[in-house]
Amino acid sequence: MIDLLKSRKSIRVYDTREVEQNKIDSILKAGMLAPSSRGLNPWEFIVIKDKKMLHKLSISKQSGSAFLANVPTAIVVIADTQLSDVWVEDCSIAAILMQLQAQKLGLGSCWVQARNRLKNESEWTEEYIKEQLKIPDKYGVCCILSFGYPNQDNQSHKDFNANAKKIHNEYF
Ligand SMILES: Cc1cc2nc3c(=O)[nH]c(=O)nc-3n(C[C@H](O)[C@H](O)[C@H](O)COP(=O)(O)O)c2cc1C
Image (cartoon, rainbow, N blue to C red; front, top):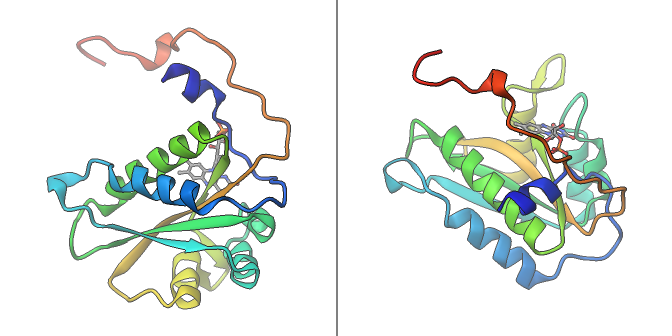
């Protein structure tokens, strides 16, 4: 597990190869195997390969989303906010499991933040994404995950000892 975690880096540049459907299915399966509060599984996933829609998503934020215009596949992680009051946590766990499964399959991935971000001075990223993807009102958008075969220098995390300043024993 540590080796997998060390090898995972956010990948924003991909080659043009499509991601095979069986790999997308396997990534979705990893998401749906995530633990969730009270086992409510509030998450749902929208798989996007259409270039026009990927371009629309690439302009969903003031920064940090432009690379989506050139990714082979994105999965938008959403949840029914009326089903669970901790849907953000549930979606985040599902998302990282999907990223790790992608890593295991030889793919790269990157998280693009949707909540609490602005498209421009007057429009929220989340509202824009919901409008583009026809997502019902009661849903929240956690993030957009990109997936594809990496086409960038992929340096692993360096080996390190656990940062002692971050670890507290018994009390803070
Ligand atoms: C909650 C969260 C939000 C993020 N938002 C973005 C984003 O909007 N755009 C982006 O390019 N990367 C985003 N990232 C990726 C981070 O920039 C990246 O994980 C961080 O710099 C560490 O690099 P690494 O993933 O290569 O280890 C996000 C990551 C997380 C966990």
